[in-house]
Amino acid sequence: MRVPILPTLVVAAAIATMIALGIWQLGRMDEKAALIARAEQALQMSAEVDYPRSPDALDEVLYRRTSVDCARVDGITTVAGTSERGEKGVAQRATCRLGSGEIATIDLGFSRDPAPVSWDGGIVRGTIAPGGRIVASESIAGLEPLASPDPRDLPNNHLAYAGQWFFFALTALVIYVLALRRKATRARAD
Image (cartoon, rainbow, N blue to C red; front, side):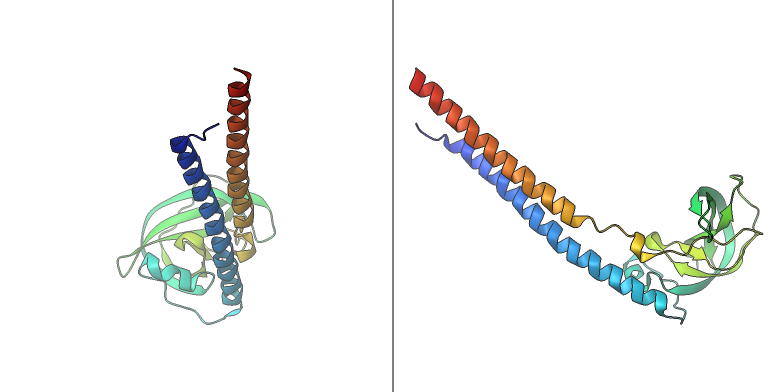
């Protein structure tokens, strides 16, 4: 029996790609573990940092304390949130224009009432959370404090993703070998 060249090349390329993606996920696992370790160290630092002016600088200040002056409130919405005591409800989230012109998202506090609160802005002290939002550490607009951002909440499921890619590669190989065997069996029967 002759092995078909083009289908074999296509399957080999697909398997090689899946293995490469699995290896890439293993690398991402190490990067994420380092990010979590750096974030846990940042939580222990008491000195405030300037709020980053660019998204590129955000990773360096995640989980650090900061303070900003919300010069103008562009809007307030609610999202699912957890209080400092672990209760579930809503987080009141403000979109602010800072005095320097940048826009910052600030989680003001916890409430059970989903209606947005009224707040005119001002100085906010808090922790820089993933996505660049600031979680206020002091009571604002009569709201309860939110749970502080915790780097242990960052998912590090890259090992599972790597395992999936390796499993997909093995599955593709097994299916292709079975298809070749079936074709060979049919050719011998004819």
